[in-house]
Length: 546
Image (tube, rainbow, N blue to C red; front, top):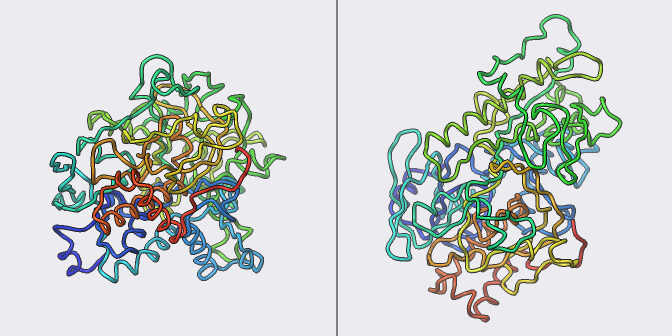
C-alpha cells in the first residue's frame, strides 16, 4: 500500500509495531501516527478492518451510539461510511437526507454496510499517515516468531503468506492486535484462554470446578447472500444459482447440538433458541413471512435494503450477511491446538456455513409449503473472496493477557453488582456497553446472555503482569471468559486499540514504561487528558442497564 522507498525505510525498525490490522489495530495506528510516531502494521488477510471487513460483521453497538459512548475517531469512521453511500450510491431522497442512514436497515445494527466500504473508509482515514511516511501496512503477513530479551520484545518475524519470505521487525513497542492473541505464546507472555474457574474469579457465571482453557466461544464463518425473487417465481432455470452440494452437507443438515442447557432442534433449522431465555421460538427467512419483523433472519444483518436506493438495476436485489445461530461452530478450538486440528476446525466451519446456504437453497421449509429458496445466491464480490464466504472467520474470543487488573463479572454484570452502575475505575481509558453475550462454546455450553451495565476500560487491563513493551490492542486485554462477552464488540475493540496506540506513543514521548503511567497519579492524569483531547470518552452519564 505504500511505495517501495517508504517500505525500505521501514523494513528493519519502527517506533511501534502493530501485529494485526483489525478494528483495534487500525485504531491504534490512527492514534500513534497522529502523535507523530512511525508505525508498521501487519495484517494476515488482504483487507484491513477485521470484524468490520474481513470478517464481514456489521458493528454490534449499544443503543446510544449515535449520541455518545464511543471515541471521536470511531464516530468519524461511522460518518465516513454514510458519506461514502451518499456520494457514490443512487440513494432515494429520503435516504440521502437521513442523518442516521443505515444502508441495509438491518435491525442488529444502526449501521449495516458492505465490508468493502469499510475497507475504503479505513484506508481513507489512514491515508494521511501513509502519505507522510508515518505508516507502512504489510498485508498477508502472519507472525511466526518473537525475539525476547527478559521482559522486552526485541523483534517479531512475519511470514508473507503468498511468497513465503520473512520480515524481521524491531520496534520500541509491540501491540498485539491479532484476532487470537497470537503474539502472546510466541513471546512467552503470561496469558489465559478459555473459561476461568469460579474458584478463581468468584464470578456467578464462571464454570464450577477446574478452569477450562479449551472452553472458548464459537466462531462463525460468515457469508453474504443476495436474493433474486424472479428466480423463485419461475418454474424453469431454478437451479441457476445452486451451489455444489458441500462435502459435509448431510452431517451438518442432521447435526443435533449437544449443549447444556439443551438445544431444541437441529442446528440448521428455523427453530431457534432465544439467547436470553434459552426458550425455543420459530424464525422465518423473509419479513413478508411473519407479522413480527424481528423474527426475520433476512433483516437481522441486511447490508443493502431496497428501500434506500433509487430504482435501478443495481438496487434490484437486496443483500444480507449470514452470521446466524445456525452457522456458529463450536466443535473445534483454534487456540493452543496443533495446526492440523485448528485447520480441521476452520474447514468444518466453512462446510457448516456452505451447508446452511445449500439447505436454504434446497430444503428450507417455506410457509407456502414449498422447500428451498432457489433465488438465493452467494455474493463473493461483497466479501472479497471466490466463494462468498468472508476472508476470515468471525472470532469472538481470544487469548487474554494476565493483566495488572482483570475485569470481572462483579465489575460490570447487573445482577452480580446488584447496582445500577458498573465499577468506577480511576484509570479509565475509555468506555463501552453491550450485554454479556457469550455464544455456545467448545465446552458445549449454551448461550450465556445476561444484562450488563455500561462500563469503563481500565488501563490496568492493558498492562501485562510482566512484559514492559507489549500491549494488547484487541480482545486480548485483561478480561475473563465471561466479561469478554461485553468487551469484544466493535466500538470497544476500537477504543482498546486507540488507547493502546496512544499509550505507546505517550510512553515514547516521556521515556516511560506503561505501568509507570498507571502508578503515578500525575502521569495518569496527563495521559487521560491526552485521550480526552483526542475525543476518547472516559466516563458514562448515568444510564440504566442493558
